[in-house]
Image (tube, rainbow, N blue to C red; front, side):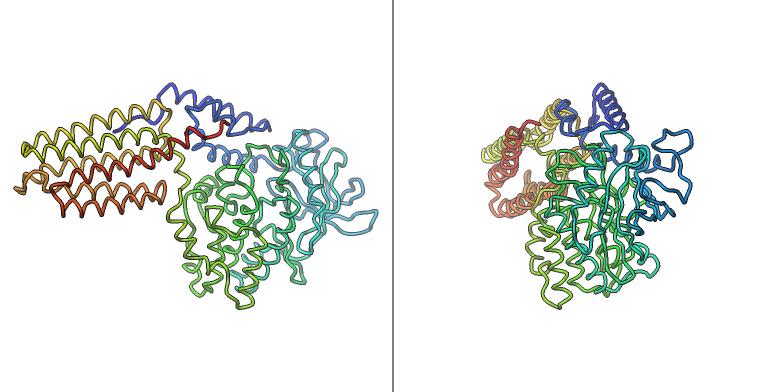
Length: 549
């Protein structure tokens, strides 16, 4: 049951497609994953698997590319010598910079007030279309009025330099405070995040998603007021286009939600900001972000695939209610998080008032729902649905045939070996060949194939073990149920928790086979066939009824 994941011709074609997509992204063009997959349906699985790696590589490149201009650049990006006057603003000193822009302390001459000016750097946002989208979204954030949102005063373009001005906040960022002081007092950070969550809720009510909430974007004024800033990656939820091109991975990997990290733009919404707020809570309470790795790409993979270390493991004296609030924010399934940032704020306020928090009351339901829900790998089952229906028929025939031979008193071991080793082995080869013809085989499917192959080896070994132990033929048949149950337990962890039901059914079947040996294979045939037919029918229908991209 081994085979190459991608045929040589498909492998070359896949490389060409990824190369074209990467070039388009670097040119600043809008690239939509679903469109690319629709144009190449037989390679859609591999394209989706490699998409996150492509985007995070592009993001890392973007950050590396951004920087101050050289004298040889166009007039738009000519270097600055501080202090200098541009339009109505006197730029005094640089406060900081990142991958998207540089922030200056400045004085607005006409109003004689100090402000912060953010100018977009050259590079990834150099195209006119991208600049216009940025300015449109910067203008949208200027509508936000909340005491915990750094107000945007003006957005525009001066001498070819796009910019927006903001309130100048004297103080430090949350990141700086945690770095300088270590993990913060629990009630202090609960108050800070509750205030920020309410501010984000106001933005959500106006259809604006932040998408880059992180400790360095939370300012702590000298009077203790927390303020959220840098809506530079903000997106209007009803807008057709966002600040960055559609293909760009938006956000900071360590604080972005799984749907952002996976490039699933259709799933990004208010719950994505809730997840990031949970990451901020985690950082301030433990002194580190939920996921730590050596590279942005590894971080993205951790965000998509892994759960963070429990906060109490890093801070044993952490209040359990506060930990549960953090854990609920960091749920990978969107529907298990708080439904809104306002709901998160309310739970934090309940914690501060020593009242029962909603995160605790919903713990059992959340755990139960999480156990039985599909993982992000479950989509591969749509490739297996019809094949599983046929596999259920093969198992039923094998069970009925074995039961009939046993009923007729057949004791020749080779006949049973022919059914369960040679027969099922031949079907496995046919199964795998059909799957390969459907398109590239993903990594997770190869893992499932190895598990299936291991179970077939275990079943084949039952016959020589019976002979060596002088058992009657089929004496170890109840182990068929146990072996098959183990396969479904592994599938449950990899694909869908619903498979725990099949595993339980097969374990019960093994007991019934031991109690009723005369009907053992008849029972196993029907139960095992049902265990494959039901999910096979479900996923085959899902594949057939899936809307066209």
